[in-house]
Length: 226
Image (cartoon, rainbow, N blue to C red; front, top):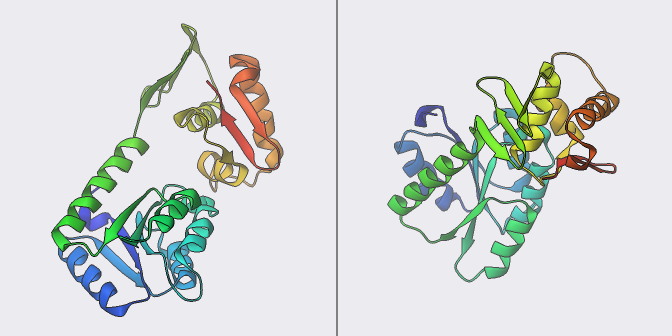
């Protein structure tokens, strides 16, 4: 992804910090928007769908921890990278932020050049993780480019939605995918489907790959187990 296509949302209640961040990150070629509190950040993230959010912890209206938790509940933002901006003395905020679903944190104050380097590294890391087209998990091999699945040495001929569902779950073993996220990523806006549609496809995959690999998290969703 080119810089000019990368959207970064800055969230901080201090105008001076927002100004400095915006100036330096925009000058590097990224698209930038600002939010002065958590509530404004949620609204802009929903409408703008940023790739990265730089999020302050201590803010009015809604602090950074709660904002992060709310962002993670939005299935349409499942690929969003969230990075906290924390003061060097806020060790508790770093831990709380990661527990709330943040991907990383940056301690401030930080020099603009160092900040830009960190942003590049973070985006590069998560782009690499999200763009894997070939992966092996135990006895399972998935090749997205060739639309191919091999399990215990045998090639499986899966219908498109079964392939996409398996590919999604197996891309991050042990991660619990919520039903809303599964529906959005596998079915999108193609048709109106319900939760039972997921259950039926999971049942078919269990018949072909084995029940032990698919764990139901009651009231939440599913995960792939190696």
